[in-house]
Length: 85
Image (cartoon, rainbow, N blue to C red; front, side, top):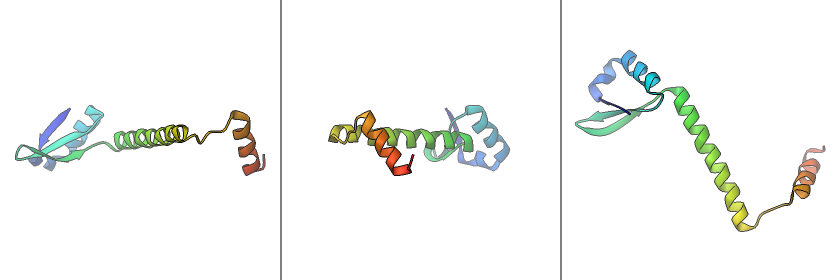
């Protein structure tokens, strides 16, 4: 985990290098307290994708708990009729 003081943001090339080397967020502090998080776009996109996938899985689990289920044949038939397959 990289932690840098706010004044180091002036050296954008170095901050970019640290983000790439860390393959994760770089935490920026001001007066010893966390203020910002800087990260590489690829890391951000991976993180957002994982969060979306977790949200979809959670929604599916909530459907199971609520009893919103179809057996396999019903599900396939529903998809076929919806998309005219």
